[in-house]
Image 1 (cartoon, protein in one colour):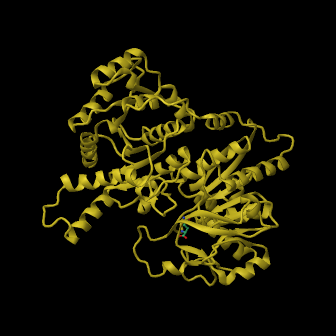
Image 2: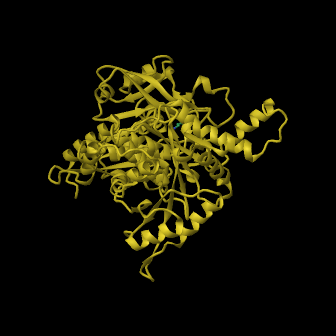
Image 3: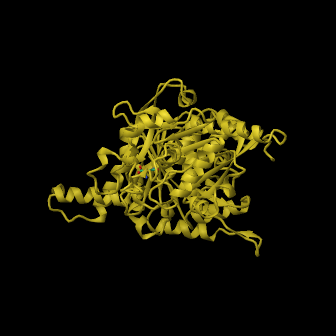
Length: 547
Ligand code: GLN
């Protein structure tokens, strides 16, 4: 669309201020006022995508419908705006350089000296504008990863400067900074903000709006001071105070008029009131739960909550469906191996076994599944979690001693989980798994069918291994059935145990599809089953949120 507007979100002072949440909140507010919006994240690291990054380094890798392995901020964008992102929404320095170098090798530059300016910056500008020209968007919000002043951010800031020069009022820069509170002085301090704006100015970029993260309210004096020393109007100094939930941030930004300030600065007439009723209802339910359940999340990155970001957010969404507070108890699968299942699982109302790769902690996951399978405790296994459920069933119900996934034991006598045919010849790691959305046919009369209420669904994948169909008949005879199948390739996508109250394993990742506007039925189903289990277990105590 020729008059797409471009909003850039930069960050100063420190990382982890929540640029992703501010970008997603602005998108939500503009959307609530009737505009179409997409959000893009530019990451200054050299990896082609975060798919090959260890979760300890970068948290979860989010997967889009079109199979892009992306930064976890794209998860926030989707959860807030309920619109799908794609490969074009996440660009890294590695990808920019890769395409410039490929062009150079092809001779596209006709012998020119290939340089950061203009070739790298042109490629960055092209990727930013692509979203505006391809999609039908009123706004493209581009979040620049990292902090201004970082060496690796420089080409991105230069691209922003050039785009401002070329497109003028169709662009706007929102700069997010920190206003720290010094308790010894009893004061909020603006100097770090002044310095970070100065750093941005050294690159020729004047921010239009400054969003200040703070633990205390900004008074008029502080706002005036920031306005005066950073060359912005005081109405453009926006307070972003700590919130009790990230989902409260759009409403805080509404109160601070962030969206109206952006529209005013871009010369767009003020539209009607924003439509945020559903959002407010969601927050209301989140804040006032009538029940509570405790669900264990068994994985190996439990110290690091970002590694399971989408799963944790999915539980927040699902809880509101049943007016239920979901306390997620993080359980380290290696600790389960050390201290036993009873120690960790005896007072839980349900468990999820997390996705993952590699052998570490695998036996702890499998033992946890034995525990909940035998006791009728609700269970959801996601990707590797589903594969563990299959291995557990093979060993302990079918009696196939030594059964395993070939990923963990290539010489297992019973490879109930095997490498996918399409994966056998692939030797490189990045972007080579079965990735993105695939259809799945659901078998009528199953729990999965009741949960989804549909015959055909689509879910996102990220794996190399699959259920080995050679064993399917034996599994079904013994009580674990395949209730979801990929119609084209006959791959088992969902398994369940009909004799168990709620036992579901899925080869895909439902957590990537759960949003505030549309909580995922599998997580909602698990919360409901956990509530039922808890009420059966402690009828006197019930499931009150205080319990
Ligand atoms: N490691 C398993 C596989 O590659 C599961 C992957 C996952 O949990 N995302 O198939």
